[in-house]
Length: 388
Image (cartoon, rainbow, N blue to C red):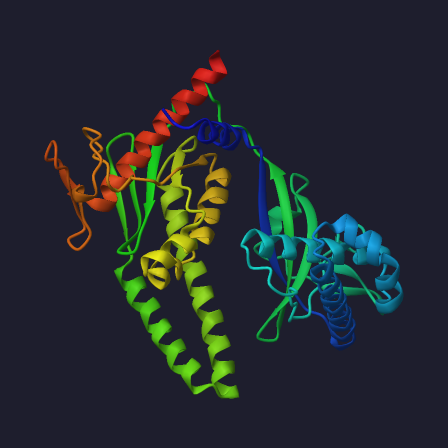
């Protein structure tokens, strides 16, 4: 029987009706608009650093408390409008809370890159292929490239906060957008797919029809190791040019990982019909566990959180859902007889062999089978609670 917390979280996931995405659109500011935007973004960053120092000194993480303590000072010192000043407190509050949750708030959070937050219909608006943005120099109109993003201009999408990012001299507007989607009927009996993440296979899946898919990760593993060796070599040099090169390599690796995650998550979701439920492992706390096991880099270098996020939103776009279950013992438990033992799994051979019934299969496939079984049990429990 699944834990009550797992059942509650699964019911929320199945009933979720709001799809949240980030639309990334290219903008083409002229010279004067670039100057105005950069000035605003640098001022916003400096204000965030000022607030962050005070927040750490007084151990304050609530945006309301920071606003009450510093609003007048920030408005007077940095000259931003009321709405953008409010956004600085929310930005700092979120960053401090994140560090505090990780038990890593040992010094003030530092904001290095120029950035700012614009709120829709207050600090920016979009009309006729251009975006109008509020800056410290006044309002500026910037051409917006909407090709490939036409669907987001329908009335079904609600636009939220926006940020501006620069990549290699190219400017982008990143906007948080949301829309409502239909719920997955609790009374239905969906196809359930257990999804196990790993090293040799980035994803291994097993569905309620008995089908298995392997998403091979060996080539990805080798390329990741090359990046690791290159970063280690550059770190030892310690020169300024090596540091610049190190940053460029890190950004390239992140882009590559995101691209791989996009492709495999799309392939996974589109290989099943709408109404499917994907069962994922709840991998919170993976970093701490893998540090203790001595396999920190191998386990955490891949962006599993990013992969899970992409599977979740692509599943919602496709009319499916994802639920999470505890990952404990899924690789040690026999999916046939339920016998659990560390000896069932041979990590070197990537083989699972039950010491009780003798069932043999790939160890990642065994974990995916257990996840599928846990998912089916969780959905039955949700349905039972819904019918009672």
